[in-house]
Length: 418
Image (cartoon, rainbow, N blue to C red; front, side):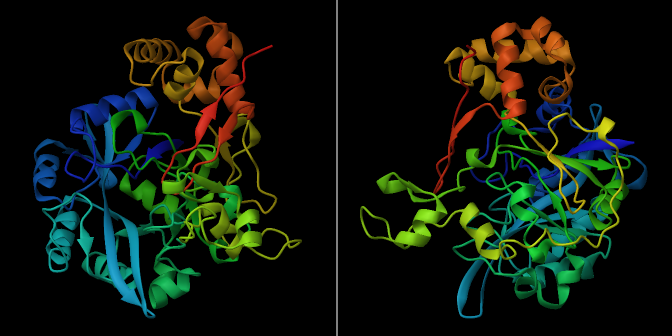
């Protein structure tokens, strides 16, 4: 069996998140999206942890249940430290096997930061020391670099990241089983990076509000439990990932938001890293960094040391992108609410858009089913010809995206049918 997982999200106790991020709402939206396993998020925050303890029902193999949805204990921490003469800021995803382990971690993390100030706490620990402390507290925990390529807080980020995982994690690098690609990167941009040859590549939503839940996902083979997650990451039992078009992410291109400057890395490499308007340094985006660290042109994708499962073409969505080196494939997806908004020319949070969204999901079973699995005839019956056509265009890449840069999301448009 396989399960759909979103394992990077937040509660209402994290900075700049929606107050609607409650357990009731997270479970309801997971069912709408078609998600089998959610991270609890923010278990380091004492008030949220109390809610988790009071409401989650424990099942076997490290799974917790609430209103028909499976949860694992998950959190994100921000490591702020100096290394090799530079200030570093790195976000890490932490997964604990049970509530007792999560409580033990909070005791240790509290020695290095204020856990009550933010659901994603800042810890005065290096990336290496954070991994060591986490596994020393409970060796069954998992640590994964979050949104690995983003300029700020990414392990490979241009502003404060590293050029290799070994540089970042030192003797603990072998205990880091995977990286999260982030919204501005997809697996294809990572396949040619030799440093990732033995790491699973996963994608999650980093949702700060309910509608953004599931905008990126990972489908694992196994059961939706902590044990299933542990095997999924440590053995790379990824069946496929579900990705935004990376141009939609807010750090895909190089640029300077204040001056409205957005540049492909080719331009930056040729003209230099200074903003052509004000002369200040440009923020070098995710595409630039993946090009910096990939294998030389002409070389094949690096071999993968994991023994991947043969899932078979029949189990994959029709628009799956395959890797020549046998890495797990991925599919690109435009969130349903964004498609409806583009077709109607209305904001995504307007009543009309939300009503149509609810109708389509009710008819097709889930957002994921509508976007990846439903046939054209099923979609036409569920939402009409215009939206049916737009969903198919999202699957096939017949869309236009003005790439995001320096904190500005990319702008999506769907060409009208002729």
